[in-house]
Image (cartoon, rainbow, N blue to C red; front, side, top):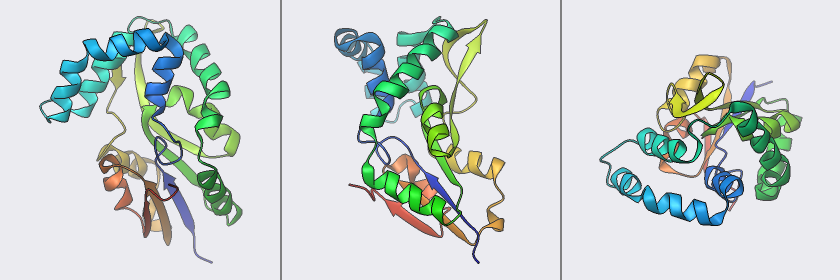
Amino acid sequence: MKKSIAFFDFDGTITTKDTLLEFIKYNKGSFRFYLGFLLNSPWLIAYKLKIISNQRAKEKVLGFFFRNCALPVFQESCDRFAAEIVPGLIRPKALEEIALLQAKGAPVVIVSASPENWIKGWTGQIGATLLATRLEIRDQCLTGKIQGHNCYGEEKPRRIQEVYRLSDYQEIYTYGDTSGDKPMLRLGTVSFFKPFR
C-alpha cells in the first residue's frame, strides 16, 4: 500500500476569505481596520510593486495593530475568533477532501502564512498538523514582528522538509490557491490549484 501525505494552504484554499484580514476586523472593528489599512497603504503599495517583501509588509500591518499587545489577551481573542468566525469561513468541499484523505490514512498538514494563533485550535479539532507563521513575543507581549520567516513562498517547502522526510511517501498531495503556494505545490506528486472553488 502506498504511503501518502497531504499539505494544504489555509487562507483562500480551505477558507473563503483571508483570515488575517478577518481577524483584524474582528479584533479592532471595521472603522479601525479600514483606517489602519489606509495609513499603511504606502507599505502595501510598496509590496505590490515588489519594493519590499511580503514579510516586511505583513510586519508593518501586524505592528500597527498588535505591537505591545499582551499575549494572553491576544490569544484569548484568537481563540474566540477561531470558535466564532473560522467555522463559517471553511469551504465544505475542502473539509470533505480532508476527511477522505484521513480515511485512507494520510496525515494532513496545514501550511499557512497566517499566524498559528487562530488556526491551531481548528487544526486540532480536525486532527491535522499545523505549520504556520509564528509571531515574535518579548516579555509576554507581541513585538509586531514575525519570529523567523513568514511561512510563505519558498518558506513553505523549507518548513515542510524540516519536519517531514518526503522520500518516505509515494503519494504527496498539495493544495493551494496563490503564487505564494506554488513552491509547496511543486513538492506534490499530485497538486491542486484552487481546487474547491
